[in-house]
Image (cartoon, rainbow, N blue to C red; front, side):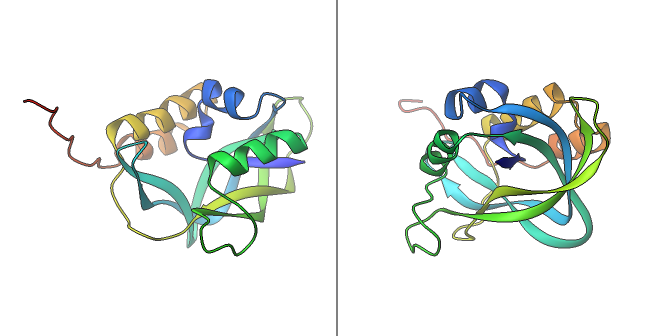
Length: 165
């Protein structure tokens, strides 16, 4: 099955640790959406990403082939229990993405993939560490330069002073 990564799961090390059986299919575009930071994460120290409908905009990411075990692991990491569960941080949904650059040299095409969409609980700017993880993964996967520049320009939350400072 296919999974579209657009945020910190772009980081190859993080994705491999969360979904060890996954493999890259290629570069993909989710049209008529934008990236947004819809909820605060204690683990990341700032907002974490989601996608929101936005006519004429695009979210770029990577399409992965994942196993059932990989998807179950991603569900755990994204705090998805079951569809509609009030305790979910993210909902897992199907979307249509445009596979723009297939790593196997096949033709571009439209494919249906799983995506995690965050609930809008507490919109917050991301931490520098989180934003940089997304940018690092975007660069490693060679997402479009203008998109990487936009990600790099995302304002981050003020850093918390160290205890005892």
